[in-house]
Amino acid sequence: MTALSLSRVGPRTRRRPGAQPVEYNLLLTATLCLLAFGVVMVFSASSTTSLLGKSGDSAYYLKRTLLFGAGGLVVMRLLSLRGARLVRPLTPLLVAASFVLLLAVLVPGVGVSANGAQRWIGAGLFQIQPSEFAKLALVLYGAHLLASRPRMTRDIRTLMPYLLVVALACLLMVAEPDLGTAIVVCLTTGALLVAAGVKIRHLMLLAGGIGVVLLLAIVIEPYRMQRLTGFLHPSGDPGGAGFQAIQAKIALGSGGIFGVGLGQSLQKAFYLPEAHTDMIAAVVGEELGLVGISMLVGLFGLFGYAGLRTAQRARDRYGKLVAAGLTSLILTQGIVNLFAVLGLAPLTGVPLPFVSYGNSSLLVMLAATGLLLNIARGGQAATAARNGRGAARLRVVDGGRGRTRSGAGPARGRSVARGAKSRDSRGGNRGARSAGARRRRRASG
Image (cartoon, rainbow, N blue to C red):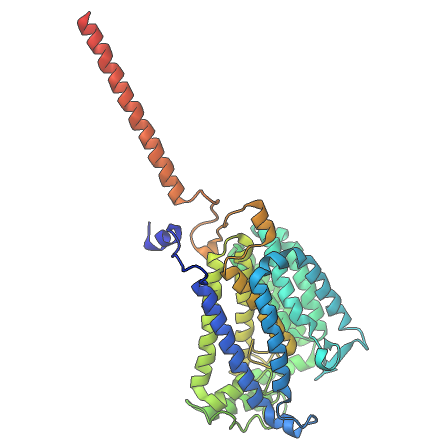
């Protein structure tokens, strides 16, 4: 047995009464640092355009970010206490509500349009983006379904109930149009299926089918083709399709190693489109340089490490899948955004979690973090706790082969073997004593 396997079956490190696990502290630290980083950068990236824009208030986006950030922290705290037990029974209702909102946003007069897309519902301060809430609901639904029916992972046909729900949600997102969020949902779903133990060949078939659909979605929309050609050849149309990518590269190149200084960016002043939302990482690179980008990536890396450790140490299968799915959601969205800013992927309009301005995105990310914190501190869903189920192992999350039933691990096997050995030795001793007695009786007779 290797040292790694011994560490898994051995007793957990004892903590002081009231102390939280190290995964909890790492998740909370990374989240608060990213949130504080985002508040500072949103104000820096938006102050100039806000002052010269319609609002005339340089702190317009800062005030809204602080307001929704405070609300999101309250939601995160509440979910960190009883999140898994509260959310799992409500998962079907959350999915149904998400589909109702996704359908409503497409209705003329109900959905709000901006920049050529109809993605929002509501007005003023209470404007929400349904696709952001749908991302969270789909992860929770997938974890609930895959935890309740482990045999679903054996074949693509048995996965169809979940895949059809995800496909319908992505279709509604693409119709808004919001292809970037649909891509994030597909990648997160793939990561959740990997964590649940779906076979690689089945995942490759799904990836091939999604790739074909993605190409068709790009070809049928001229603006998506322009984004693709702008990514492949940005200098071919520097004033059109390649403008945003070129301005992002100028911002990153101007920053150098240490940046030009906080608040000193020139590109954010009407040169870089969406500087406080999709392109905020370019402003970070210009003002704080390579050091600032490295800090940003490091905080996401810390969050990912703590989230996956939380999935590994969760008490039940549902907790493992929720932790793996939510961690994958946040990391996938961050990677898609950073790749687009760095010129490694086409522009998708996906915000950077915790950092970009976006009320709905910030609320959803903090709610997801609250669920992760609840699982990190040992929270279980009501159904699993009521049924008395132990921690089912997931091959990808925990390592090793397959699942083992609670209480049937190596330690129990060794105790059974020792008991059998002691019974055999006692039986052998009794047999030897009885044979000796028979020989003595024959000799005396």
